[in-house]
Length: 111
Length: 114
Image (cartoon, rainbow over all chains, first blue to last red; front, top):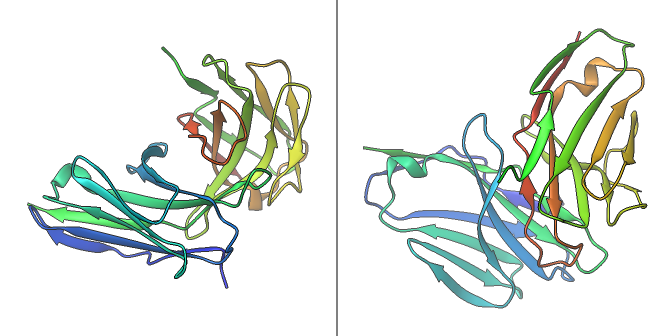
């Protein structure tokens, strides 16, 4: 089993819809969870971090974490064409662990 | 505020040639990292430096060497480039190696080895 798994997509949603991006991880000792956004030809940039079970909201973005199911998700409300990018899930195993990235989900928001 | 600066942005090498990728950060971060990104493979850690004076191997260190020149600079060297090293290379930094630290990425180096 891959350490961090994401559906590669592409995920296509219409403008204004909710985009739902999912990620599963294998190490139950993982403590920190991140979503990075990467536009084509650009570098990743952090958009959300979450450390405890439940939901964390920041503007149009909501990160959800369920450690029992080893599952983390990102919801993007009122999706805009400018949200079209690849979204990378990243998981940090602990104080001595490195950040492990999923392969990313490509999101396309159609006007 | 430059953040993380990488040079060069593009490079073409022939098999067997050597080169050094340079990275510098101006955020007074302690930890620095080199990743490579390949289609369908995601970002993979090559080497990291938790603090000035230390370096450690990541997931895919073979064929690479690193130097933490000072707190600001962390270079990646390919001694004898191979076509399998064709990739996009990203340097990143973080304040510490704590698990909740945010990574700041440079703009990347597109490397082609022919």
